[in-house]
Image (tube, rainbow, N blue to C red; front, top):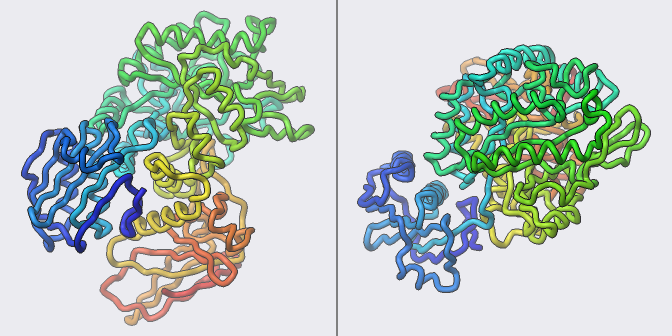
Length: 623
């Protein structure tokens, strides 16, 4: 792999010659083998260049010539997503090559990165991904978030992702069952009355375990089938495959709110598991699957089955073995999908004995998959390995990093596996463990709003996992280098989003607070996180206040580790503020470089002082 100072990604092969130079926006696309998205993407990329520089003749070519393959020698590998970039200043040419349209899109992304990083020179560049499935798992956006959703898709293009998984649930119109949509809105309104309402229902209202509540799905509402089709078309135009996630068996609150008679535990006011012994369950579920399949027209469907806790409680199920109910439900759904030529995926957390530690008040070291504690009463299902059909792709829940032996066991049994909830940079023994999987999905269980994306560590996970997905040499010892590259990239991108006129400071605080993720019902109340303001005084007497927001552009000066440990620290406390700030070690503590949009770029700044709120102090260094 070859690293360039001005680019985030590394490349399989790069041969450079001569000095770097700039390419002019007046360059022309002299030839294109496609009129699809890659062409428009290239045109947009050229529009963002400056007028200065060399005007080049640029071509898009849907093949890699034999001459280039010969020049690459042993470095060349046939791969449908591979691409080549050749640049010649003598001939005034830039040529992008790939055997597929998808590969051409990646070539444009790489060309854009070379331009942005001032790394254009005479060159031969060749690259292809390390993993075939490079995905992001998200909720369906609410109607007012559709434009932001499309912006997020364009970001995935930049980082060369090729798959999107969208949870449907109650967040898409059902023409056969409109009551599901009506009750979904009612349910979401009820559980979002406060930042802790959903958490209270999930963790405090009942003695038994309950599923997390996904009221962020659809932003508490739903979109039409036509709107969903438009999103899918937008993705596929950019060569991003789209798979639907249809929660079934567990996380079926969206069904049970409309059809409470299908509830497995009748005393639960907020049911989340349906009865797998009631034939009407499958009348409703298969209607849902039919409509989702018709909208998505996808080769795969994720059938859920994660966090399955309530089992064998109703009159129809109570005398049956839980493991038989679990396997039987999976087989029914899988067989039905086969009639539609759709392959199944499922979350396989219930097949792992040690994937997540379950914290029981009396027995804190029980596996997440089961608990004999009477109040929890969760049957074990991990004995079903091998009984579930082998043609189902297993999505490794991977909240725990301690499941290596069980990952290998699934692999040895013959299941295809993908990582879910993927934070690839956190994986120990990465190179060997990644060999068990064809790739995976970074997973978002919250909002796609910018502040949520940062504070839920989505941005960091997306860029680091993208880098690892493409890098054929990365292993765990490279973590410090990748983390530093990602911190610089995300802060640089954040500053660029503010425009050219910014105010930049360095600050830190002794105040600390435990990290809290913002999903499963928790949402951000902005005023609760402001610990103070930077008071900016301009020479003409104008005064503005710039908020210091704990968890967003500042966190504690104490990282809880040494300087050497901090270089690879991936605790949420040490990564939450990455993006709108650049945290780094300075004189025995962590300092946060933070940027603000200058509200008065035409005025000269006279002074900046920190003003405390609620008595919380911070140390300010003006850049």
